[in-house]
Length: 221
Image 1 (cartoon, rainbow, N blue to C red):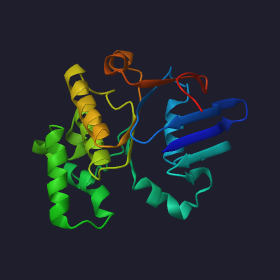
Image 2 (cartoon, rainbow, N blue to C red):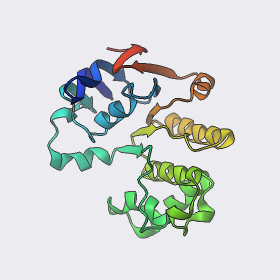
Image 3 (cartoon, rainbow, N blue to C red):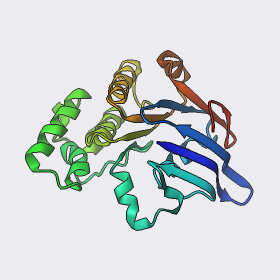
């Protein structure tokens, strides 16, 4: 499903974000990416999502080398990937329903189907009563749940989440992990970057630990 071969990413000449990284994430796997701030967790996710390009190495997603993927084909790749950004990236000129629906509108889905799927995912995340609210009026935890709903509404093959429980209390975090576990059980590959080691320990899933841009724990190729 996802393979990294000797991937490095340099933002500055003497400051590597990732160094010679090899990683294999099989289809349907659930992986936590852990490590201190600045370890390279967010960079790794951005490379898989093609928000960033590697300085060296190859990244294969579904057999396609996205390191060399033409810019015109990146939107097609992203339709298969749901992303929960650390800063949410909700649109302030659209309400909650419209923010979540946008992922389906770009696919040309019929309006009736969009309404049904958006309502179901918001209900699942406890946000259906806020459908008409502006994101700016929501708490950080509520915005986080809307961002997660947007990432899941199109039932992606891959879910990438960068600190998805960072703004949530313990009970809400548990609910999000239950949702992630459920979508994983249905076949979605899940990759979660987090500092929450208590949550990681309780989940009993595969862990890849980064430090200074290198994998220091966890299975590699």
